Image (tube, rainbow, N blue to C red; front, side):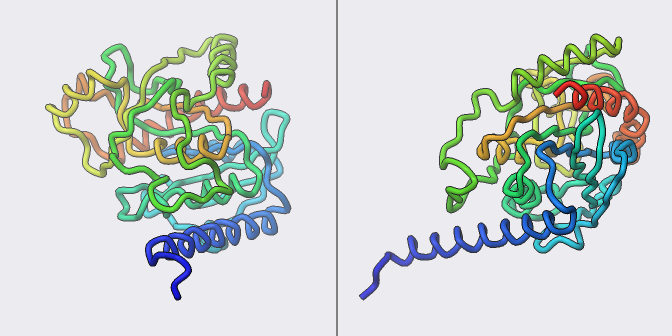
Length: 285
């Protein structure tokens, strides 16, 4: 006699397997780092230099962590760095896996799930993105106040892992209001121009056509290829999320083709302002 329908039984097995893989990674990170700080900074394309500011750093490779996918993209080192910055202990995720690399959203978000499971409570996400708002300049920093999932893929599809959060998490305010207010205060104190707006997360990896840019301008201020899946996972887990974009190119006034090399290079140049801002936020958390 069959105790469960085949579909339900398969779902239970899949849910258990996913949680086991997450816990295996989480336990490995705890052991390798000697504990996991509650604050995580995810460094986007060209922003890996932020990790060099961390004092008393302890660095491990994604390759040393069971089930962690390695990024294949230039500008994403694939390391975790634990140390001190802004008077507090933090963890830096130096590089991320993107959906355009040909992986399932469950795989792409596995590292963040593991770190949330290991004890992360606050997630500062950064990314490089193209500017859609004509008021934005190359090198500007933008505080993400909301996003649109233009990837049309959700990392929560499939069996829900109840230990990670509810089946239907509320996404009406994915980016923490208090963290946004704090970031504004820090930017003002620094005399740093901080834009604000909506992030459109596209699947990529090709850049947008002129017609797509005209369409997206109606909905968002910048367009990129990350952040949305991670924000969704973090919100489901009850973590606080802060999102910061570096505008690496302006799509509205573009006079030539966009290249990844350009994106990474501008990210590096704007990295100092980004690093100053995040360090200021960390000091006041």
